[in-house]
Amino acid sequence: MTEHGHKRSGRCTVSPRRDGDALLLHVAGDLDVLTAPTLMTHLDVALTSGAALVIVDLLDVEFLSSAGISVLVETHRLTEPAGVSLRVVAEGPATSRPMRLMCVDQIIDLYPTLEDARQGRPAPA
Image (cartoon, rainbow, N blue to C red; front, side, top):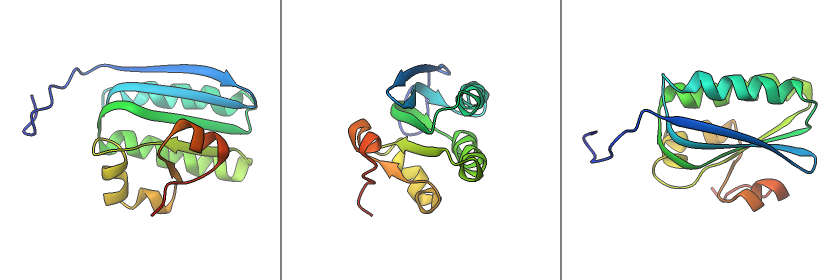
């Protein structure tokens, strides 16, 4: 158990699915140094799939470490020159808060809902 009372499962699942012209990656559980490589593998596959839009849904992530954030920043770095749009759905203290504290929201657009990400409507600052 962490100091804030969250019992960490140490598990992370990434579920990919096509959604029209987008590839959606739904992430659930703890995204940390042990599980971030799983997300990176799915993002690598997504980038070679030919999708013009990749949406990473973090709404069911209970813990997000700097390792998970680094995977998203690195993926953004790779997608930008390739013309692929990376959109991250993150809301709440476990996901959007750490990314805002680390100023990741100045690099990657964060969306409060999956529908906002589909429509390209970023969260208000």
